Image 1 (cartoon, rainbow, N blue to C red):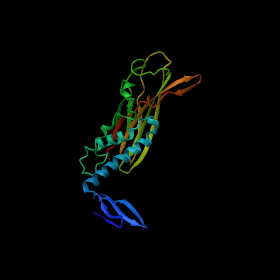
Image 2 (image 1 turned 90 degrees about the vertical axis):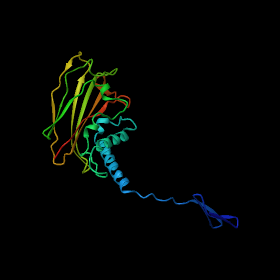
Image 3 (image 1 turned 180 degrees about the vertical axis):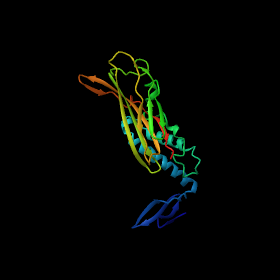
Image 4 (image 1 turned 30 degrees about the horizontal axis):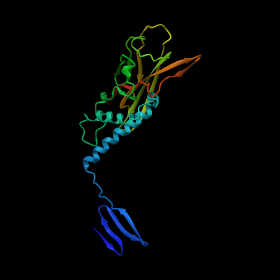
Length: 246
């Protein structure tokens, strides 16, 4: 309640506080009540922080996959996907980690929501974890004319793979491997068969392995090539994910 005194209001009206200072009437917002966090909300915030930190690390380390040609909501989509990964974890709130969740739920995450990988590559590589030590990647035979989307003016394609070993519990990135597969589109249409690729992922800190893949498109100018990819044309995705059990 406020009181009118000598032409000046003093006190509280709603959430406004009136007071006099140096012949002036000052109006301030009254301090609100602080909401006390419950144990449950603190635990949920801890789990969200774990997913958010993991998402930031993936986005940073896999920069060579998305090339910053992702949609504006990519990071939020990635965090939500990681939350889906951790939900099957039977640990109590505040202790739900990626390691204890279902890592398969992050497979086929698209870095660019406008460009789904399956619209540009009409087959899937077969990806396996062998003896907790190696990632094996095998592409099926594919037809250059019918099994891959060929943008206008594109003379050369490059399939880029990035195999990254993380330890999200320690919040570290352990190591990565990169491999590039160039495909000339100037040759006659033909069936392509690629060799199986293998990458070492053994490390005492290895916890989670993610495999990222993108397709880069190039147009030839004399002896040089210009990248055609943009935010409207950049298929890039997480195509494999594994937990390495200790």
